[in-house]
Structures are given as C-alpha cells and as structure tokens.
Amino acid sequence: MAGARLRADAERNRAALLTAAREVFGEQGLDASLDEIARRAGVGNATLYRRFPTRKDLIAAVFADQKAKHLELAEHALQEPDPWTGFLRYVTRLCELQATNRGLSELLGGVEGIDDERLTQLRTTSQRRATEVILRAQRAGRLRVDFTLGDLGLLMMANAGVLHRTDDPQAWRRQLTLLIDGLATR
Image (cartoon, rainbow, N blue to C red; front, side):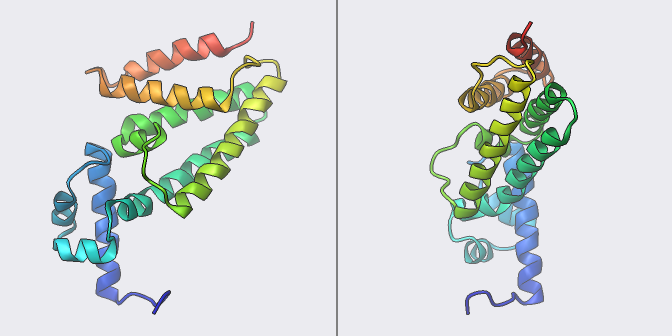
C-alpha cells in the first residue's frame, strides 16, 4: 500500500538509519560503508535495504533536508537589508556547511548520479534563489557584474578541494576571504 504509515518499530528503524547515515556520510563522505550505517543504527543490513533499496535512495533521504537548509540560507540572504552583507553571509554559511559535513560538501560540489526528484526540485529552487542573491548584490553595485551562478558552483568546488586537501580545518576561511576580496567591486 503506497503511502501507508509505517509501524512504530519500522519508523524508529527508519529514523535511526537516517540519523546514522547523516553522521556517517558527514564524517566519511557519500561513498561511506552502508554496513557501518546499519551498524550505527543498530539494525541489520536487510532492514537498511528494505527501507532504502539503493545508496541513492538513502543519500536523497538524508540530504533533502540539507538542501532545504541551503534554500533557507538564500531566503535569509534575500531578507538581509544590505544586499552585499546578504551575499557574504550566504556564501560563508554555504562554505561552513561544507566544512562541517563531508557528504554535503561532495553533494554541493556536484556529485554525479544522484538523480532524485526531491533533490532536483530543491536544487532548482535553491539555484533560482542563489541567482536572486547574486543579482541583488550586483544591482547594489557591490558584486562584480560578471559573477554568475556557475561561478558560485566553482567556488563551492574550490572550497571542497581546500577542505579535502589540507590539514588546517580553517584554511577554507582564508581562501574564501581572498575570493570574496576579488569579487567585490571597488
């Protein structure tokens, strides 16, 4: 029965799996062991695969709320009275999210093969909002007029690279400061 409610124990197992997956993907990235996720959730592999038949299904369930948070960041930036401050806070917070969650970092950096309707819809909406954040800062004369949504994607990929190739957990902040300095109009 599609849409039927899960039994209480099945719902607990699902919630435990999502919590464990969020932790493991955050620590180890999207290629993390599904066995480890099941172990941390306190369930068997069969339970994991019954709830989430593929890795993609589990990733989509875990990161749909993270992408929703990404969308909230853009909404907050658009509500900020100063467009440049909104842009700076938006980009900084995106980079902070990447720095604290390896799986999200990989997802924001453009992982291939995670085609999920929820994630696609959230990605489309968040890209539209990100474009509004960018245009608003440009119209205020504070952000280079040639900066695009594609450049924001490259910035996120660069941040992911810094995060994964340095021993300094704060190196991304210096890199972001240098990038932002180059994006500001004079």
